[in-house]
Length: 263
Image (cartoon, rainbow, N blue to C red; front, top):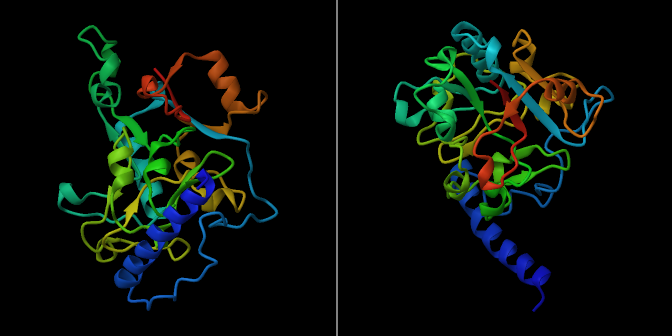
């Protein structure tokens, strides 16, 4: 049996199991999830104004970060994507969040680190890896990578196995241990809500890019975030990376993140 046939049979078998799980979660009858719900089809269809790139990337300029600005960016992201505000920290859903430099870059932290980095909130999100282990770990292709590099989640295909969470070395995925919908402060009707038992994460605002808009966090970042095409040598993001020293998280793992940090 060749590799392609073996892969197909493996996927078909697991998908059948997975779709059964979805139908239980959603109340749908088996077969209600149509063949059109394939990971190879785009979740968001581009409009005429759509922003496109060969490989999307982001630069976080830590020199411009402040607590209030980070809170503003997180709020914009979470409002856009119907991220619930849960009381229990163990159940927190994270698309965009902050942490200390020592946690974001544990291998680069030492006692003589620049003083300004001590206590500075560092913005964190899915690293949109060019070699994403989460995609390889997902048995149902609920996690998949687009041609422009964005690692997406198809919530309808997620069976809640959390293999992707175990594979992600950045802790960038969250699991809905409880129904998130009652904890959404102000629901955005333009973005789907999720359900208990589904994994989720940042998607680089793929739904906004399809409409010609920049990611919500970038729009309110006051220049602290630069978003663009890493493959375009004339793009702003490439200009910023040429002129500044930037690092990425856990580069030694070989995941090739698309998020850079100027420190």
